[in-house]
Image (cartoon, rainbow, N blue to C red):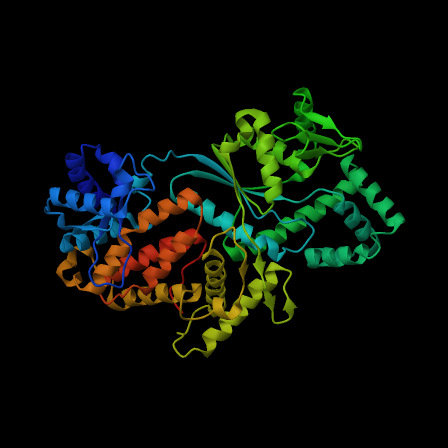
Length: 562
């Protein structure tokens, strides 16, 4: 890794002066963010990060003085051409020709693995991770509310795979519960087998709307309860209807996931864990943790003082399990099946997650809370199509493709494309992803079509345009070999800015790997897109390569023409 060799050189010199092991200094040496200033250093060492007593009351002038004193004790060499002190930092400028040559060689050599081979990841153990995300409810059209979980989970899985971890992508479907009793009764009354085959989820949605009108009717309630009871008793005919709903739903979801560039290794669901959930209840009872309320429900006391001020309900009054009980059964089952090191849930249910984490303490290492991580996220607000308030994801995908196609058709710079519809789909999806990933995942955000689809500015559309433009320049001028490059031609300020930014890619990946936030990569790519790039072809290739790598991690398929 280009940045790695420079960091090691700087750490080696610092270790002799500070009498510290070089490996202890590596992570304290960071690449300097690209600045509008024409001359900035390439790396900096934060003085506070190496002080044993780096308390918050350490005066800024003291840190600056220590930075000056340390800078004076260091010497330039064939790698570092300049050393200076900043506000609490020691700054290092790399020999310009060496910088250009090393960065370009590393990007060309590593290709799609550029950044992930960094020594920043050397102490991170390779693990087996289970990532659960998306989780729509079967027999319903894919609701827009599941979009964020799908995009975020896909990003996390992509990032883990890129960093060398083994990943199992699980879609834990909402495929059990009393609502299927109501839907089953509705299908018996209003269902049409031909419509079910031709447009399964749309037809089931229409059936559900119809039966829901009489959901409060006592007779309907009784019929729905009877249908679900038969389902739980594994009545062959009832189970056959439910299985048909499930299979048709998964077929439809796979088609939509393909449009999103998302895949799963396993489709699971609540229905898998009916019997295993009873085993969970037995364990809780044997441990003396399951308590009965006056209403007959089963609860676990989660309060610190054990005064029942905070409880988690894990069993209905009739002895059947709840979602949280089945979730615990799923976690234990996945450990037995996949022997995972970490399990990541991409969900919005914050209260459920808190109770779930506390309950897991009682089930040993298989469900240990420090091995399970919940990634919560906010809501998308104001997403409407031209026809009004949006409900279904496919409406959004069709709308963004339609708008993008219209924008591309009306733009004079748009080239004649082999498949304009497919290009519009990829560019439109990039627009959705970048708008979604720009901020903290836990924050709600206001969706805006005009902002998302702008062809200029910090948008997925312009990110795709930049990639296509760089690809076009490579095609136009031929694929130059790195051995032909005269790096002396890459020393103008614009080229140096690009090289400096490429240096930082491993740090950005490391930061995202630590907090699972895509915003670091998004911000980096958007800056790379706006970094002046009037240098030579090899630099175009390096910039395009890193741009493409980052986009793929986010779940964006880079286009080569626009």
